[in-house]
Image (cartoon, rainbow, N blue to C red; front, side, top):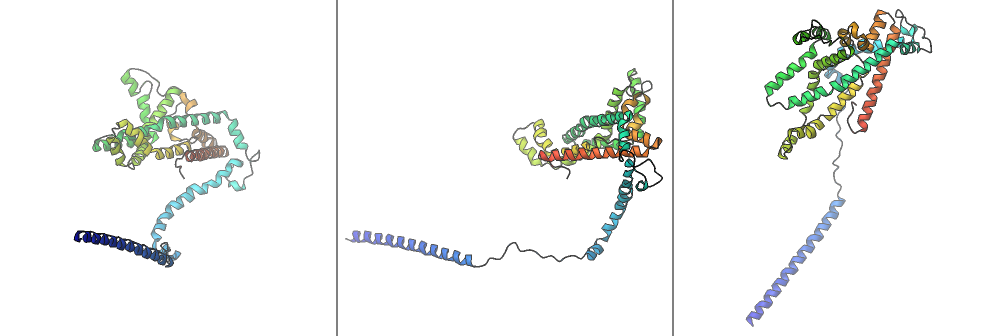
Length: 354
């Protein structure tokens, strides 16, 4: 009897514990729901309250930062005087050739003002200069643009920082030399009979004597002069690549070439696109000093560019309206290529220059 009574007592106790547990859970759930209803009725404070900042008066702002605006006066004056004011003389391209009077007061040229453009395109010398300018700039773009990228990749792989700094300094020093100095050095090196290279080799190879050789020397000297300077831009872009990407590639067993192809080049792709757009915008532009100082009578058919044509017709022959028309044509075509290349870059998902 005592054992049976004890068993009945245990069963009643367990049953009472279960009733207490379920009742506790029920009241807890009821209180939770009531609490949620009560909290939903309470108006919560807005987390996106606007921070009202006191507006700074223009006079107060000018008094506080007047030194910055004072520093801006000199560059603004430079651009207004030497960049924007001369733009009024673009009208010379559509007016009669007269520089003694402002173009506004000069009569319009024939053919509704396009007479100088028609004369330029009928001139065989202009067409030759146009062809040479496009050809030399395309060679500079195709051959010269990859060189700074390759040089930056090579310098980035150097393990000795001191040797890297010395090499970089030696590479970009030619940028500070003028084309007058470079042309003088090149004449002493590449002259057919008296050049140092031909004397050392015992030959008379015409480095600057034929049109093909002159173009090759022209491109080579341009790369030697500007390669190191352009390398700085790509080296600066390489510093923005996270070292963790190289560490992860090292763990995965990637070779050095795979790191360059899959990490380094994609990391500087936006910089390459921007510089490519800017170079395409210069496709019809031409420096005057580079071809002018390197040219000679034997290669005048390959070295005459639009800059030399403008110099010969505008300065020497005083045909200022014709030279202005040619310069305006160059600017319009360069802007067109700039806009077109920037649009194509954005369509392919790259960042443009704006």
